[in-house]
Length: 142
Image (cartoon, rainbow, N blue to C red; front, side):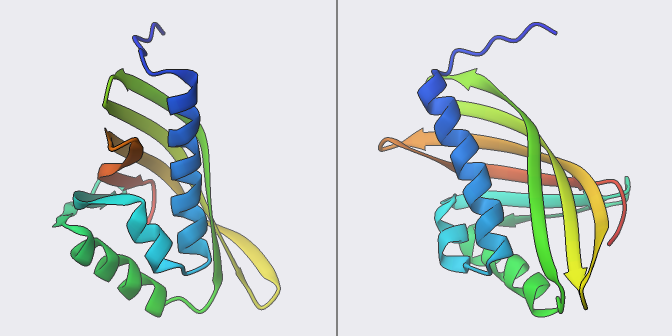
């Protein structure tokens, strides 16, 4: 596969760090840090097992409401593992596709909940990369 990636290694590293930070923030229920991973006018949508697309949720208030509602229903401990990230783009715009593997631990037992993709569009402004658009595409409901 031939890629046309004009983003420097430093910027690619910053994007990898941002994606890891977003997952860690969710897993530690740190909504303030998670919100900082998105631009205020960001959008987010999701699709489960080829079903209807949910969203888009526009703006960080709505996106954080979505995350907060999901967290409030969880009694287990979640770990979002983001791997195989491919970044493409140039200048101040980038796209990233990553594999998401979601685990949950409850009562001492860890199980796989689902796998899927994060499909992200990122924008560089004032020296910072943040998520502009995120689509979560899960293989199964959890």
